[in-house]
Length: 350
Image (tube, rainbow, N blue to C red; front, side):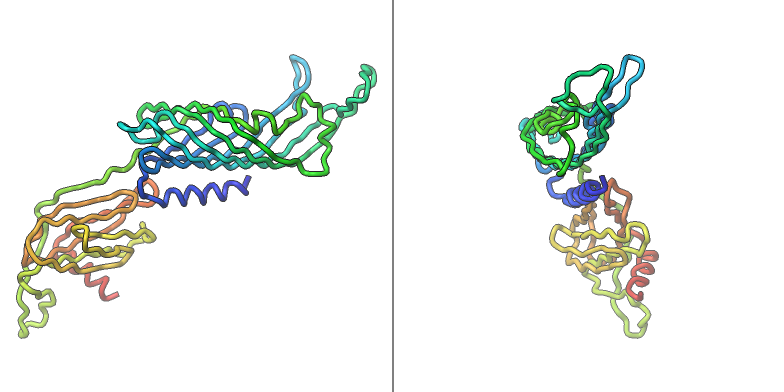
């Protein structure tokens, strides 16, 4: 089981880290198989308008056989295992909506690893039936591996963030049992085969939820704190903020914080000037004339503020990281000169 959890987590991390064209994250679990002892969670992420990539994991009891009477049953056969299954889907009818909703057609590749156990009567097809001399019990344990490539048809119903998805898939399966083994001693009534639908097909009803794309956030800010630029006077060298009175000075900085320290993002002004805001970084933008400026940043969420900055003034923009679904989101706001100057100088001097 651990052999598949690690690649599953790494694959989820890789897909999550790619933000281009992503629309939704979808998490689900196959309910009928869960009730019968097989855990089948899945993670799906949409790329563009019509395609998505899925990662599925399976673990548990694939097949079970019992013997006994109406009042007493004992398990004599079990096929336990796990599987890792990446797949890709195409959603053809998404002109007015974004995948992954509605009808989909997908290709999948599944890799099984399983263990077969049998403790029933030792099967001997050459032995005649003798009611007073029952067959001896067998104690068989065999490991095996299999692969399955197939095509799946599914339809995802949605009710708010909740999804219900019936799925039917079928393909070809092949595999091998470890050798030597004693599978010929297993009663054929119980014994699994690679030709079984268990390996070659899929019949699922998935229930889960999806997370819509975080739409870009845009805000127009007014009443922006500022300080007027003044001309440098040699007789007063303590005026460290003295600058050209006709320029706009925008100080952008990010105080050092433990929260979100590993997350960085680019702050862009008018889609042309840019600086990296990692933990403890700072930068000075010098802008030429009064104008409406677009200041934006993006991680899993894109945030933009529209601000009218005037020539001859100095502004301070403090950047931080807010809580997000996966990797945090950018936060920034204009602060008073008395606050911004102290925090900015502290970063410069450390």
